[in-house]
Image (cartoon, rainbow, N blue to C red; front, side, top):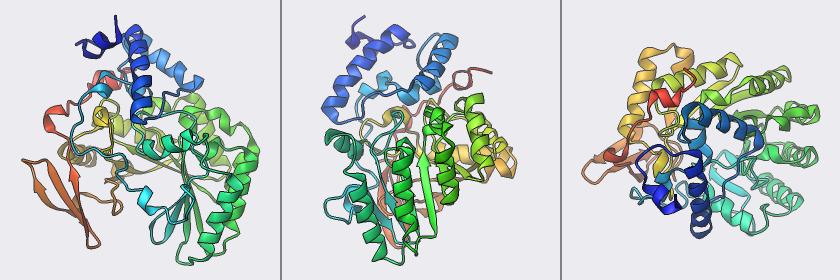
Length: 377
C-alpha cells in the first residue's frame, strides 16, 4: 500500500502501514519544521507489545511517539507555532536558553536534546531551530554564565525551572555545572527540573552520582508520565530509587485525545504514581500549535473530565489542577470571561491580561475508546 492510500484508509493502521506513515511524516517534519520521530529502544519494546495485543498501531503509547493519519489532516483552526510565546520572553541577547515569563521564576533550557520525541510536544518550533543549529542551544558553560549573570541582577527571581529538551539527558558533569551555577546565586531558593527520561530511558538513572547531585541541590523533579502503562516495573524501580534519595517527585501531563482522555485512564495513572510517592500537580489542555489536532479536545470535554474525576475519586486522586498554559501564564476554568461558541473562541483574563483561545471544534473531538486506551484490561 502506498503512503498516500494509507493516510486515508478507514480502518486501524497496521504495522506495515505505520511504516508508510513514518516515511510520510519524515517529509512533513522536514517541510514544516517539526521534530523527527525518535523512539528509544526501551519505549519501542512497549510499542511492540501494544501493537501485538491490539493488532494495530493506534494504541495510546503509539499515538504519543509515532504519527497517525490525523497528523496529515487540515488544521483545526487558530493553530500557531509558539502558543506560549517563548520567543518574546527571551531577554538575553544571543541566548535562546533563558526564558523569563513569570516575575519570580526563570526557565533555563540547558539542552535541546530529549531521550525521545513526543508527537504532541508544544516546543517543537524552538527545538527544531536549535537542532538545525547543531543539536544543542549553545556552549553550556557560556549559557550558564549568562544565566547566573542575569539572575544576579534580578533578586526578585527565587526559582529556576530547568527544561528543554530534557536536562537529564545531560552528562553528570554537565548537570553538575548547571546546578552549581544556579546554587551559587544566593537569591535562588528553589530548583525545579522537568523530565520525561523515566518514561523514555530509565537507564539514565543508573548512575547514583546523578541522583546524588539532584538530592544535594534539593531539586524538585517534575515528571511527565501521560499514561499508566508508562509506569512499568522497571520505571517503578527508578521512582523508588529516587524516593530513597529523598528527591521530591511530581507529575504534570497533558490530556491527550486517544491517549488518556477517559476518567478511568486519568484515575489509574494518578493512583499508580501516588503508589510510588509521586504527587500529580496538574493536567493541562493540549496547546493549539501547528499539527496538534490529533491530540486536542474541546474545553467542554476537558472540564467535564475534571468534574467526573472530582465526583468519582478520593481527594488524593482528584486534587489536581486542570489548567491551560497561555501567553499570560496558566489559567483555569474560573478565568473564562467570555465565550463565542459560534466562532469557537474563548476569552480568558488573568491579572488584568486577556487572551483569546481557539477552542477545538466539537465535531472533531472523537473520544478515545476505553478498551483501546486500557488494552491490558
